Image 1: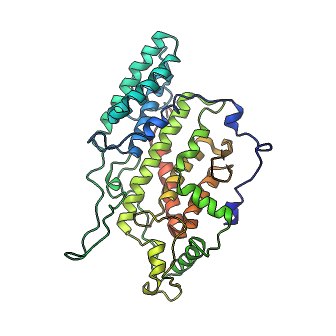
Image 2: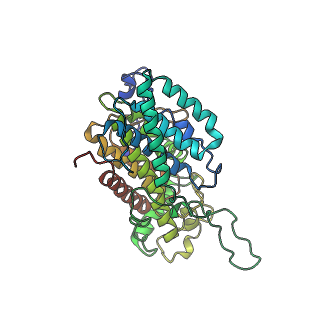
Image 3: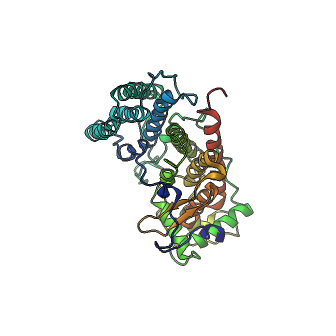
Length: 407
């Protein structure tokens, strides 16, 4: 625990060394201009079943396909696209992103048109611009076509009635439908399903039960203030917030950045397919349920507490494995594969939270994982299982997709 907390360094603004990205000046990267568009897309504007997670992966894979068609550096995800000599990579990426977003998010068409127009205006040479636009349109169409049958089947389920006329929670089983969505990287949704959680009679269960009871409680916990900040920070943010700092770094090309973001988004999307597959397969109880019902778990080493409450609100889906742990490990593994020891320190200085510095991908992955125990949402064995799944997903993404041409 102390090792994780030690990764938080508190400095005043006057002595804080600037991250590598800031040292190179403002980065106006075409790959980042579309973040707001795909993040605010209304998933219910059409009946095609695209979700924000899947859409973001689609946007970045389409942009990679477009940029790579011009550069010819890596193997494509779909069919090879021919680009006219001198085509603009920036125009190609912008048009590809626009094509995907406009297809799935008609309510955002006006905003997307404006972002496209401003991006294309930066390409001065008309032939290069026209060539890039043609490539981008083909890339968007290719990704839309290849994912046409990948949509989530059906809606999230509801909890079945225990008996006729008896109330049951009316909330939907969040993620149930997502677990049936077609993956990007995995061969099947259950390819990397975690092993079963430990037996309730085991020492692992009683040990991890006691840890989350002490560290994850809303009141009377053993958490320090920095540890509470860790829980709150990652409880309200996507684990992908770190990706922006690794785009536009000196010495990296647009196609390299496009490949990196596409791999990270594919791994992240498949993390959710895999984790929800496992969660609903094992259907394991959350700490708030287990600790309040500790007298019925058959383990004399667990101490029940009928008034125990978690530090943060518990998500409305099964506990095992830890979702944040799967997704951050998948993204972190792609980061580690891309940058290795050359990864610049990631600095997150966001409103309402302590300053964070991650010198390695592992330090980022460890803190996100630890945050879920500190929130009172997960057991350590669930965190470990989630991290293992995420690492494997990230490794498969890098192994199976976008290899350099000729390899």
